Length: 315
Image (cartoon, rainbow, N blue to C red; front, side, top):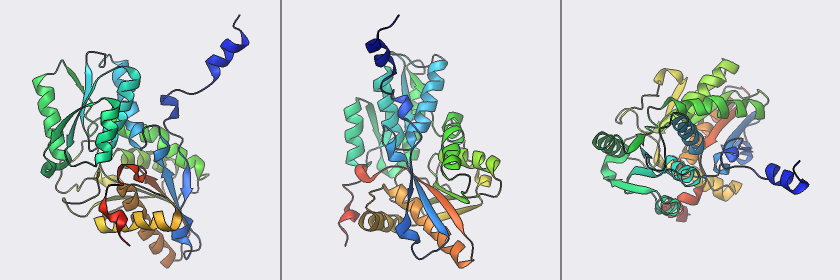
């Protein structure tokens, strides 16, 4: 029979995987002070152990690969990333005992490079002018050259990406808003967050409006997001799912990051700032039409990986 100490040891604490998901919803009241009947809520994904929404997709991809025997101490994970998914992979690889190799544009923020170095991931740098597409092409090249060395996770084509949000993110939003959510807004990178969350929310209530956001041009500062018209389109992306798409200027995302920092005390990443700017656009439109709304968006990460950006010093 186990002693009291042994029982306590077995039940105290949580594992790394247990800490992924169930992130809080943050009320962005400063934005809607002059919009009665409108709420904007942000899913605080920096509460995940790797600091971003990408912990969800990465853990689903890794667990599926492990169940199929595709990862081991000698066969590592390979993928293309702009940063956050790579950080999640590196964290999981360190904790679960498999090597991680990442293809990344060399102009990602210095903070992201530091995170990856700390976790011990191997990085293959690609031309920044080629963006995430260049990293994808490099990952495919490495896989073709040494197929037995790598499990190519391919987050842009892996259904576990969007399924992670179908199973977790959407249900959390539904529960946390007590089913009152009227609009869902998310940026498009791999598109997994938007695809999975939208599919499940539509099952829960077909009247929920789901709006995607992407950069307004191929050359932008919304790190991690894709301009679909000019990019390698992810296989998991279905453009017909969105009720509407908002093309967002980088400057609007920067301005919203500053506003949230200086008026709400929230330091969020650039893509999160963009998502909130798109949400405010929807909020203002709904208010002008005389409708009430509960708008939920994804705050992909905090500002800690972007503090070297110059726009923070703007007055």
